[in-house]
Each structure stands twice: as structure tokens, then as C-alpha cells.
Length: 174
Length: 141
Image (cartoon, rainbow over all chains, first blue to last red; front, top):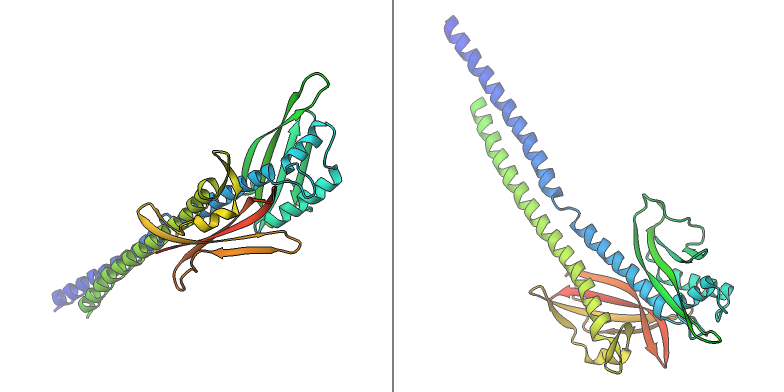
């Protein structure tokens, strides 16, 4: 009688341990499910990052090619004249206001834009929105840079001057 | 009793695992397809700006400067990576009193995923180069 009781008790213990191992396997399956669902989760955000980089390049090209309202000079050309310090076709204040309008029109929602032009000791930095600061190292940002060349007419010969330009699209409100 | 309970648990374990696999695979396919559509939108936009709609000056295409007269010659369907896509484009400019040109091309279908991008471009109009926005909507055919 006692032998039968101990046999039943050992069977019950084995049954409980089997249920426990099954419960553990359930936990593993759920973990595997989470891992499987998060596999390559960044694919879409990478694709939208590529689009933002494309927008940055297009905005740079637009500033490089489109003309300042009422003038025949491009935005980056006018900025380069201001930075290099030659006789300015577009007055600085007008250029800052006009460029501000362009940046406001094109900046994607949730993003700010910074335009920087530098030549030797002088530079031009303009940020939209106006109350934003330069993006920090941790901020998500997309940059496109190039050089703007202008020809300065001299009495004897023409001179070529260059300014380094860069355009940065950065996340705001974080 | 415990034996039956264990059998039921084991069957449930297998069913849950298969369901998870199927769900994860379908989510993976959706993500790949969405990312592919987003990338195709960028590809089509680049093709329009650098080739199809680029203004020609002499025999040279002026990249990033668009000639609106070229809209009429555009085929609004394109094959990218073995898949067929259709697209629609629209231009808007003059922020003070916005002027909208278009949309050009077929309308996007309802109930199908559509990817859209709006990029800054330069339009050539009456001898001037004006900044504008070009919106491109792309979907699978």
C-alpha cells in the first residue's frame, strides 16, 4: 500500500515538473516572437532617413540655383558675396529675410534647417526656426555641403573666390 | 488528468509558435514592401529631377532645374526593380499666395499603400529660376 502511494507521488511530481518545463517553453516562444517581430524593424526608418537626406540635398540645390526675389542672383551666390566681402548685389538684411521665408517654406514638419557659409574669417549662419540653436552632437541631423564659387571682376583681371557652404536638416523639439 | 493537461499545453505551444512565425513573416514582408515603396519614391523623384523633367540648355540637361513643358511627355508608370509603379506629381510655389500646378498623372487608388514625398526644386519660368515644391505620390500597380 505504502509502495503504491510513493509511486503515485513520484508520478505527480514528474507531472508538475513537465508542466513547469512547458510553461518555460511558452516563455521562450513569447521571447522568440518578440525577437522575430523586431527583426529588421529599422528598415522603414532607414528608408525615411534616406528620404530626409535626399530632401537636404534638394534644398541645397534649390538654394544654389533659384534666384532671390527681384534679383538675378541665386541664394547661395548672394550669400557668398556677403561672406567674401565683395560689392553686394543683394543687401544683407533683405537676403536674411528672404532666405528665412525660403527655409520656412521648405522645412519638413518637426525639423529645422541651418545654412552655413564660411570664407576665411567671415561666415553666415542662419537657422530656421529663429529661436533654435545649432544642433547638438546627439541631435538627429542630415547634412549636405559643397562650395560656392564667385568671380570677382578686377581692374586688370578677374579673380575667383570660394566659400564653403553646408545645409543641415535637424530634428527640433526633442 | 495531468497527462491531458500536458497534451493540451503542448498542442497550444505548437499552435502559438506557428501563429507567431506566420505573423512575424507577414510583418516582415509588409515592412520590406513599405521600405521598397519609400525607396522607389526617391528613385522616381530623382529620375524626374535629373532626367525626365530636367530643363535642356542646348544639348545639356540642367539637373535640378525643371521645365514644366516636359510634363506632357512623361509616362506616369515606371518599372523599378522588376515591379511596376504608377505615380502622380504636383507643383506648388509662391508661399505668399500659393499657386498649385497639377496634379499630373493618374489618381492614387483607394485602399492601396501610397508613398508621398515633397521635395524642393527649381522651376524655370519666363526666364527666371523660382523655388517650388514638387510632390510625388507613388503606388504599386
